[in-house]
Image 1: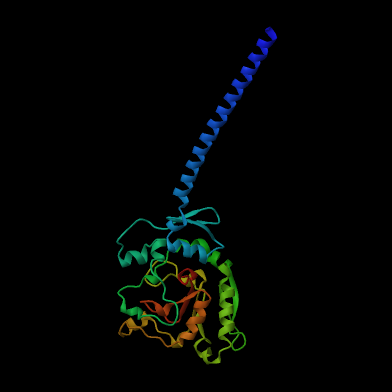
Image 2 (image 1 turned 30 degrees about the vertical axis):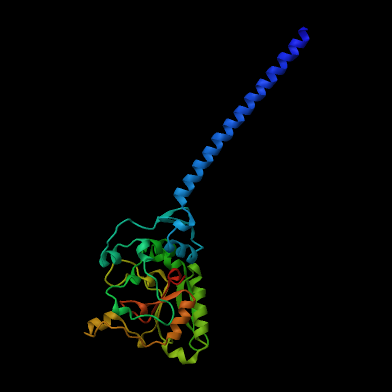
Length: 284
């Protein structure tokens, strides 16, 4: 009788312990699920869903995959694990503010009119295509003159007809893009006169009238033959009207754009000899 009672007591204890273990497991699963839900909510609020990422950020990510790895609703993540703000939150900026104190969003706010069909850029009152966020380009191409110089490579410009040597950055393989442009243009003799005396590439200077670094200062720009150029400041100095004009065949512009370069001839402050590597403005 006593043995039967002991066995019954032991069985009850085993069942009790089992129930305790099941209860503990259920509690753990519940809190784990709650924790995961909180973690998931935190990720969504920090990183954002794809639809919450502005088109400008998505274009930047597509254009510069070697440097940018992630975007969220108001920032881009660089490969060195630093976040760069996209929008500074200042609304209603004047054109001077956009030009002199822009953020990354201001740089991306206007679409570049790629292709051979575009409206007269001088018909607009101001041109946002000139707006650029200097810290973005400094981080990518170099903040000091020496940093930019360290990244320069040689391009053989028009190798079969002129074989000139131009210096441009190798960052983002821009030197390869420019070499491909040169090789393609070199096969079109009717275009050579517009290209055979390039105005220059790298030049450590600021944009005229601002304290912001020129695209030439980052080694990402090239000026073709100055002889056929039209430049808004020259017209102003000579008292000529600020009116769109261009003497370069649009065939040249198509080739540059195909390789990620935008053309200064589509700016309100036109600079028709000027091209700079800005693939983020050419992505649909």
